[in-house]
Amino acid sequence: MTLIAMIPARMGSQRLPKKNLLEIAGAPLIVHAIRKCQASGLFDEVWVNSEHPDFGPIAEREGARFHRRPEALGDNNATSEQFVAEFLEHHDCSFLFQVHSIAPLLTVTDVKSFVERVQQDDCDALMSVVEENLECVFNGEPVNFTFASKTNSQDLIPVQRIVWAITAWRCATFLSAIRAGQCATYAGRVAFKPVSRMAGHVIKTEEDLDIARALWNVVHGT
Image (tube, helix red, strand yellow):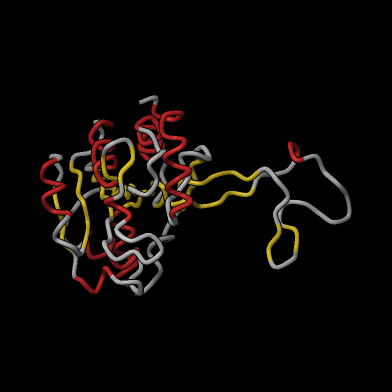
């Protein structure tokens, strides 16, 4: 079984410009992600996937490889499914693990546990989720509770929020769906792996970055 870790890095983020290059604990987010994948010792290859050439030297300095995707797959209209498919057309593997640099509180232990779940389970896609053990509503309607009675939160069935901190796809299933014109992200048997609220903290805004910086030592102890 060949396992590849792929770290996506788009330069043109609008809400938080160049967020992959912002630093926590003395290193850019992209560097932390590369080191995390390498420290797990479970991947045959670690790749940085970006439309911008500036990420190439960073990847190489850290002992990772660099895949430069087409510039059109780096704009705001491109979806992750598109750039994952483009990557898989060039790199053969059994499973692809997308590890987001913008989830810096995801630990090496989290990565190892996620990979082990893939190795033990016969799934085609594995999503990282944070479980919300509170009353949740959608379009004004209850999801995991009823308006007819009050239930203690600890007795609720938790709602699972997909956080994308780390995701895995069986490559053959993903590409087969793409070539058939179907949604590949959720193709085949989809499973869900809970991660902690901190591991699932994804940086989209300056506030998110401030929270990650405040919690870094708590999570990583450095």
